[in-house]
Image: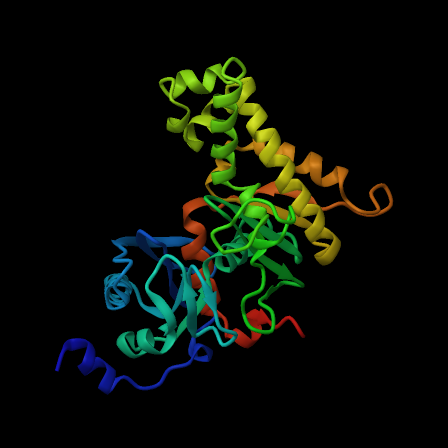
Length: 345
C-alpha cells in the first residue's frame, strides 16, 4: 500500500465548517504551467509559499504536485483547510472540475481526492473567481460590496462579487465574461464561437493589433518595428506595454483599441450587475494608467443613463501574483454556504 493509499484509509471525514475563523489555510493556484501554493492568515497575508511544475497531461501528476506542495507548507505551519483555484468549469458544489481546457481534467472530483490524501477540508473554485474574491476582500475592491474583477491576460476572465458574496450561478459557471459576444459573427474564438469579448479586449488582441499596424502602417509603427528587430511577428505584449508607457504613438494606439473594447464590455456588465467598482487585473494591467484611463473613458462614455446615476470606479488590481493563493485560502476559511451565493438567491 502506498503512503497516499494508507492515508486515504485512515483519514476521518472533514468539513470546512471545522475551520477556525482565525486559522491558517493554504491556497493553491493551479495554472497550465505551474502550481503555486501559499499559507495565508485571516487578514489575507501570505506567510509562506512554494511552487511546482504542472504536468498538464497527467491528472495524477497534478494531484500529486498539489498534495506535495500542501504537505511541504503544512509541515511548517498548522493549517486547517485548503482552497484550490483552477482554470475551467467548477460545479455548483465546489468539488468537481467539469472541464479544464489546459489540463487533463474532465469531471475530476478534486475535493474528495485531495481531502482524502491530505486529511484536510478542501474547497475548489474557478481561478478567476478566486482572484475576484481576493481583490474584493483584501485588494482594490476591499471597501466595496459589489465588485466585478476582470482579468486581462491571453484571454479575458472574470469574477463577480455582489452584496459581499461570490456570484457563481445556478450551475457554478457564472462570470465567463470573456465569451460575451461583442461582435456578431466576428473573430473566431478558441471556445468555438465568434466575436467573443476576449478576441478584442485581451493580451492576444493587443498583440494582434500591434502586428497588424506594423504590417500595414510601418511608419506609424516604427517604434514597435524597431523594438522587434523589423519583424512584425516578433512583437510581443511586453514590447507594446513598454513602448506605450514611454509614449510611443503606435503602441498607444494599440492601447486605445484594447481599452475601448474593455470599456465597452464594462458598460454592458454595469447595465446588468450595477457594481460600484471594476477591478482590472492580469498581465495586461501591468500597463497601469495607460490601460486604466482608456477603459474608464470608454466605460463612462457608454454607460446607460450617464449623468443621471452613480458611476462605478475603475481600479487596477493590487494583489498581483499573490491573488490566486490568497483568494483560494480565504474561501477555504469560510464554509461554502456562507462564502458563496447561488445566482437564484
